[in-house]
Image (cartoon, rainbow, N blue to C red; front, side, top):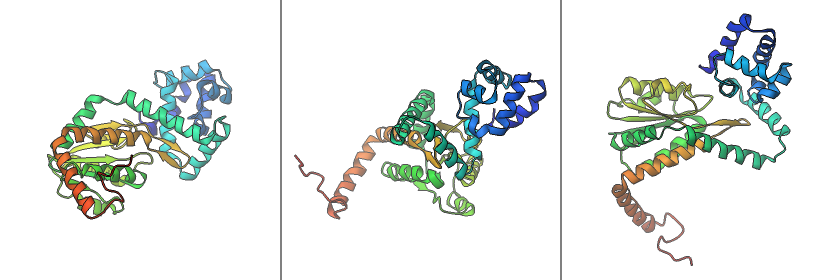
Length: 295
C-alpha cells in the first residue's frame, strides 16, 4: 500500500469498523504524526482501546500485523512533515527516552544498518555492480542532503572507471536534463533520494528510464517515487533524526557498492591508484610521503 493512500484507506473503511476500531481510526487520522512512533499497546492506551483492537484494526486495513501499519505511518510523516514539525516530533521522542542523545542516535543507526542488511536483495546488489562495471557511462544524481552521498559515490567511482558523469545537484531542473541529455541504452543513471524526495532526482530517473538506460535507485522504501522509474533498486533504511536525515545505512550500502566494483575492476583500479600516488607525491598533495615509516 502506498503511504499517501493510507489515510484515505482508513477514511473509506470507517463505516465498516467496530466501535472501538472507529475510535482508533479517528485518533490516527487526527494524530498520525504521533501514532507512527507508538507501540500497539501505547497507541491503544492513547486512543482508549485495547492492544488487541489495534492489531485487529491493522488487519482490517490490509496489513498482516501492526508493525507493517506503523512502518507506513512512519513513511507518511517523513514525506509530509515540514522541517519544523520533524524537529518537534523528534524533540518529544528524545525527551521521553532514558538514554542520552549520543547513545540513542548511534544505537538507532546501528539498528538501521542491521535492518538494511537483512532486507537488501544480494542478487540485486550483484546485478547493480555488474551493470555499473559494464556501463558505457555512469551518471550520478543526488539532491539536497543526498548530495553528500552522490558526491562521495562519484569521487571514488571516478578512481575506478573513466566514464562517470556527476550531475551537478545545485542546478535547476532544466540544467539537470542538459547534463543528462545524451544518456542512452547501455548507460547507467544512479539516483539517490530520501524523504522528502527530490523532484529533480525523480525527473532525472524518469528521463533516463524513458531513454532505455539502466536506472538504479538508492532510496528508503519500495514505495519511494523513484522505484517506478528504476530497473534496479537498493533499499537502505533512512529515518529522520530531528530535521536531519539519518543516511548511515545508505552510506554503508554505497561503501559496499564501491568495494565490490573495485574488486571487479581490480587491475584497472590498482593502475589508477599507482599513477595517482606518483602524482600526489610529486605535487605534495598530502602532508606525508606514502612510503614513510611511522613506527
